[in-house]
Every structure is written in C-alpha cells, then in structure tokens.
Length: 123
Image 1 (cartoon, rainbow, N blue to C red):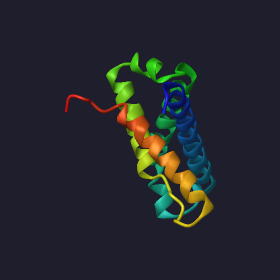
Image 2 (cartoon, one colour):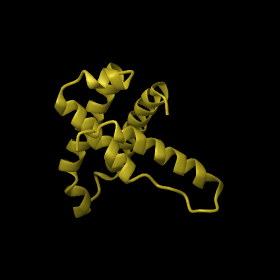
Image 3 (tube, helix red, strand yellow):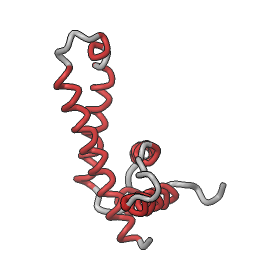
Image 4 (cartoon, rainbow, N blue to C red):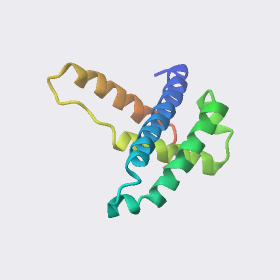
C-alpha cells in the first residue's frame, strides 16, 4: 500500500475509533441512571473513554499523515499505536463464504500494514 493510502487509512481508522467510543459513551450514558451495580462501577471506564475520545479528536484535528504523527512525541505515538492495536485486535471479520468476508480480510491486512509501520526494523 502506498503512503497516501496509509495516511488515509490512519485518519479513517482514528475517526472510526472515535465514532465507536462516542457510540459506547452514548449507550453507557443512556443506562448510567440505572440502579444496576454494573453501571454504578462504570465511572472509571467512562473517564478513560472520555480521555481517549478527547485525545483521538485532537490527533485527527492535528495530523493528516503518518509523517505528521512521526513528529509527535513518543508518548503520543505509543498512544496511537495502542489505539490502533486495540482496534485491530477487536476487528470483526465476517464468516467465510459471505460477501463481506473478503472486504473484511482486506481491511484487516491493511490495518496490519499500518501497525507494522510502528515496529522497529532493528529487532
């Protein structure tokens, strides 16, 4: 995949992650008034989700390419890698013999290629 496509994939994936976090926050807020003990224990998770959403939205506003990300500090780059790795680790691939399967596999392979950019070649 060429660098322009990787740049586009980086931004689109960060936007998808932000969307998924927003969706999760909406759901959690919808049920946060519940008497359930489960939802009472969500406050720490909600804080983490708000932090992640803020960070990702800042990044999407500040960067347009992998080169822009490379100019950020090590903590920011690590944070982005962690978000991408978590997203890839939870990426759902449709069952074989479905029309969506090939598309999902291609998307996943592209995510892997994006993640490989963060790997140190010297190891």
